[in-house]
Length: 470
Length: 97
Image 1 (cartoon, rainbow over the protein chains, first blue to last red):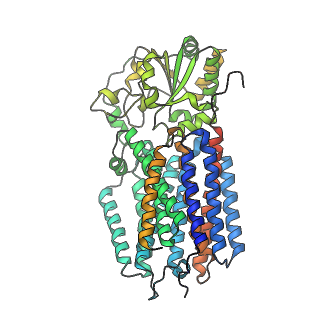
Image 2: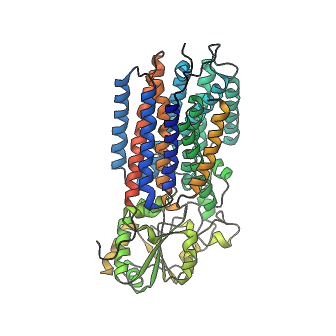
Image 3: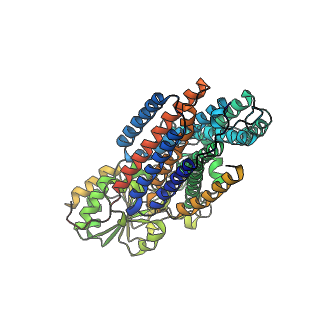
């Protein structure tokens, strides 16, 4: 039986340096100017961690390991090259599921061969502390995996974005969670196989149950939350392996995901608990159809819009998920360029929850070559709408709804919104007048005197406006 | 390392994470998720130990599978982050394109 070898101090130091590289990688993201350097440091850190591990352990199967890494690298790089920027949320969810599964596999391998991980006690049993870490690691990993798979299916459209409600789900969820915790506790007393595998199976089930009832609009929170879980899973395995690089990284990723979830919840004025409880956006038919009489609204054509835009001094563009769906970002940038040629000031206003993941809109605009200093966050630009000639809303709805400020009965009351209605004119691109936003609320902006509705596919509409601007 | 020193590293790292992540500009939140995804695949360290060890065939193959999954994430995560970050550009002076 193999005992924990005395740790080579150089090896421990190398892992620590890897951890520091990861911290610097995130630090670099404080500005687009330093972000790429940060990302390279992250790669160096990873290479260091992998290299150190390979160096420090006697490799019984170097060939197989090489093949495994090559397969993974090929799949990863090809996917990263081919993925469309609009599909980033799905990709991130898919990647989370891989981290979760990897954590499950590592925890299972450690359970089956504890000697190799140096976690055997003198009595030939797995150390008690290690059992807790291992139990938590496999539980969090499994939840991350099955939860991310569901999030992926919802984001990718393989599964309805509408919340799916099971009867009595709160009771079931709490019971399953309690059972998992109870079994992890029991695992410290009895390291039988059935305990370990039951924890695993229940955790897969709870991950599935937790995400299924959550609707499409809450996906930014879900994706961030799963991001956080994947970090905690890595940290738990780091405890098992006594590896500082894994612990530092796990803590970084865990807190990063948690902070993003918090920011997203705040931007929707919802509590984390209510998002997790799920069901938001489920009864849109009931909430939206509050028997309001048909209110009059104005419809405009692309030519009308082009004329108004050409006359304006300042235009603020408000993109939303609809822009991503119709891939309108390139056409939009072209329109922005044309307007600038006409001497119009063009700015972009981004709501934190526009799109399906944090920062989704920023990436799409960057892809379309919109300079990042033209793009503003909600709190930086909101005061400017009152001095703006045209607010150009494309594929966004709930984030512009003034009911969030005035109507206490509205489900989105209290959510910070962009004050588009204060602009002299609002141009609102929307597929049809029938649909309401994800929150299922009607938007008063549609019916204002200074609003012109541009009905149609966002990309086609913008392309027509570009043509008319010539 | 004993449990308390590991725990200390963990707690300190949580605080570092808290302050570092709040300083990330909201415009880069998507790359942040992609890169945290890539670095959390440092779990590959555990997968390598499992697949390098002798003693259990099952453990070895589970480890190798985990190496594949984590590698997808590492290479894919860093590559897609790099691709995104390369798109963020400052305002160019007019005329250029």
